[in-house]
Structure formats: C-alpha cells, structure tokens
Length: 460
Image 1 (cartoon, rainbow, N blue to C red):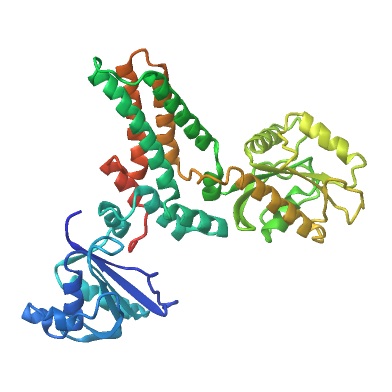
Image 2: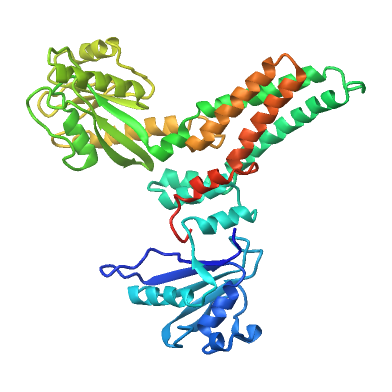
C-alpha cells in the first residue's frame, strides 16, 4: 500500500439512458475524513484547515450535507454523508461515503471535486478489498468470496459465496496448516535435539498425522461441488438422431438455441446454453445423434458427443417414443461406451404426443407441446441437488488457484511420508505448509495478489 487516500464510485456508473436513484462514492485512507470536511464545509479547502470537531458528523451516523466543489465552491448536490474511524472499518483505514443523487452529471461532478483536492487518487480495481486484506480484515479466500458474491447469478452461487465470506474455507485450510506445523515441530525437534529423550513412537505419531492430513486433502480435491457451482453443472443431451434432442434444448432454454429439422444428423457440433436450474447454474449441451455413419463430419460430431457425455456431470438420454424398442435402443447406446450413471442420469422418452407409451422409469415428454416438462425439471433438480450436496458437510473447493496449491501440498506430504531421512521429510512437510499458506495469504506472494485483485471491479 502507498498510504494515499483512494476513492471510487461504489455503485454502477449511471448512464444517459439509465440514471440511478443513488450514486455512492467511497473513500478510504488516512485523509478520508479531511476530504469529507473539505467537500462539505464551504471555504475549508481554501483556508487549508478545518474545525474537525465542528465539521464532521458523529462517526457511523448518516448526516445531511451539501457537497461543494473545493476550488469554485459551487454547490454540486445535497445528500447523505457518513464516515468511519479506523481501524473498525471494512478496509481497516478511515473511510467515508457520499450518498448522492444518481444522475450522471452529479456523479461526475462529485468525482471531479474529490480529484481536485489533490491528495486523493482513483482506486484501482479491487483496491478496497486488497487494503482490507493488507490490514488483516480478511484473508484471500474471503476476498475471493466477495468477488464471487458480486458475480453470483444463481441462489446456490450466492449461498456458497456467503459461506466462504464467513470464513469456512479459511478455517479448514488454517486447521490443516496448524496440524502440519505441529507435525513439523516434532520433526524439527528430533533433528535439532537428537540426544534428548523425545517421546517414544514419535516417528509413528508424526507419520500418522501426515497420512491423515494427506487423506483429508485428497478427499477435498475429489470434491468438485465448488467448481461446478462456479462454472455450472455440465448436462449432456445424448441419444439417437431425430429423437428430439435439439427440441428439448430449445424447450429448456426457452428460446431457439439449436436448429430443429426432420433431417437426421442436423446437429454436428456441441451447442451449449447456460441455465438456472432451481438455483443451480447449469451448462446444457446438445450433441450429435449417436449412430454409425460413413460421413466424416458426422463421425467427428458423434465422437464429440461421446466425449461430452463422458465428461458431463449428468446425462439426458432422449429416445423416440415411436421407436418400438426404445428400451433396447437405450441399452445399445450405453453398451456402445456411452457413460451412464443410473442414480443421476435421466431417460427421456420424447414425442409421446405422437406415440403414447408406458415410459416406466423414464420421463414421458412432448418437446413440441411441453407435456411432461414439469416432471423433467423436478427430476433434473433432484439429480443436480444430489450431486451438489454430496459431501455437503465440508466447504467445497472453489478455485483453480486453490486446487493447484492443494495438489502441491498433497504431493509434498506424500514425499514427506516416503522420505528416507527425517531432514528430507521435514523439508517436504515445510513445502506443503507453504502451499497451504498461499491459499489464505498467510504466505505472501505479491505477484499472486496482483492476479487475484485485478479481476475485481473498481470500487470493490
């Protein structure tokens, strides 16, 4: 931090087409209170001083004030102002806020007035949150959760971000780090004081602790809930040609996302749409019809369809009700190497408006009329919920950055267990603890901080 006072618009920038009801401007830094005085006490800036006790309202209480340009002393707006004394603030510094009318001209004039004070600068993206981290108000996982909350598009994403903001991941990773440091202390004691009478079975105790910690990290790495929530649960629509896969995609997307044709093999590539499915973010993929074909382009489409089905979290197998042996068709498709998980994946028998059928264990649907859609949505939500709530007792891993550091820690713990010498074991355990510390920011890497905070919006 450079110790300057920063400012930024904390609400969405008003536009000519959509002026907001309010514009909130935030300031943070050692002279935030001075800025508030010079902007709300006419003539104070020209005098170069102010009577702080008289000019400042009571901390943490909104007060009605007129905002002036510090140079021309022209009135800009009349609104509410508030200030907060350090260190009991979001950033740990003195902070102030201006709650003004939301017009574009008002916001621009107010921002220009702050700039003309000469001792404030416009905040960089994420700088408010970065200062909170620098001053120990939150760790990196909690800072990342703020960005996730701002970006949340579904109810479940919002809940996960709040859980992480409350420190769920911080507590988990710091607990693991404490366990590792305790084991490391025992190893270093054995190295530094080889002639002392250390507890019997110390090596076994340390080995057990390291193995237990490695197993916990491995289980955490296997849990994909957090990444699924960030990126979206992957659902692949698969089935033979002309079963109505594209029609189903359009029905679920509520728009014409895919071309629908009576000609078999129309879909050659994977077509994706993003949906909110009962609060779960979903990436729904329409794929090429699964069949044997001599057409080279269609062969590639079938290959991509099978690859997407293999990678997907859930699969919707769409079959044609007019197929007299649709259950046999299903068995043939799954036997041909298409991944299938009975407890989660769903069979959809389409075109029941043309050929009514007893779809026992499947969802009977008419993509044309929408009949059966509520049942399909309910089944999808149950399957998605079952997948996402598996292992729900522990906070899920949420970012690729965390996965990289955890993988590094897991591998280092494995080397520590297999090390031929106690000194080598201690060094690998030390590397594992450094990797864990990088996740929360206990171990500082300034280049890493630049990467994390540059993706924030200005004013956060």
